[in-house]
Amino acid sequence: MRQISKTLAEHLAGEATTVCQVWRVTRRDGKRFGFTDHDQDLLVDDILCLAASGFAALEEESGEGLAAASGEVAGGFSSQAITEQDLAEGRFDGARVELFLVNWEKPWQKALLAVREIGEVVRAGQRFSAELRSMAHRLDQPQGRIYSRRCDAEFGDRRCGVRLEGFSATASMAGFRDRSHLLLSGIAGFAGGTFDHGMLTIGDTRHAVDSHLLQADGTAQVSLWLPLDSIPETGTPVTIVAGCDKRFSTCRDRFRNGLNFRGFPHVPGTDFSYSYSDGQRLHDGRPIVP
Image (tube, rainbow, N blue to C red; front, top):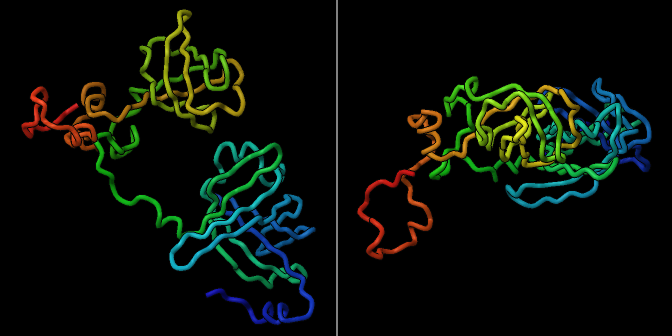
């Protein structure tokens, strides 16, 4: 049940009110920001809530029971608060957002209206809009493991067990074809395809690798799943880590890690399950190992 202080309740019951909305944003790295739709900055709980950010609520959807409520907030990029680079690097993904109703004449009079998490962020020029999801959306997230022939571990994590030191390298930018195809030098000793499905780190940002090809001049072409927002300068150091296609044969033969495989390779595929005996394929109950 929403709690409203006696003083704020008396103010709301009056003939004229001086209230506004305040958003308090706490990122996953612990940094906190404040925003308001009032025309002046407000100091609320020792956090300066900026009015120049242009934050404004757009819409709110809610339902009965455990249905996840969702809303949206819009604003403009501000060097004092949110930058385009912050959003591009995902620094506000999953941030906690607390929405308050505040008496701007007496900012200590406030009421917590809702608690949300930032979901999808859409950027357009110097503007952005962010989806605000209620905590109930976590009930829609998959829990536990999914039975699949492929591994569900993250390559190199605790469940996987592969030590990344032997499957990573430091390279440098040698050029680019476009924002999705980069040329790297310093990894000519690795065979083409070594870093397929891997991860490229440039500064503080990580980018998923689609494919890795060797060029005739000794450079390596790395194709990314998503294009970069900006191209790094030639000579910029980068780190690239090999990837895994999640198949049991790859885990067993390439990484010698078959005992830690976190999939179910003996589960028949969909085509096999719906197939029928035709006298050519074996259906004798033996395990199917890729």
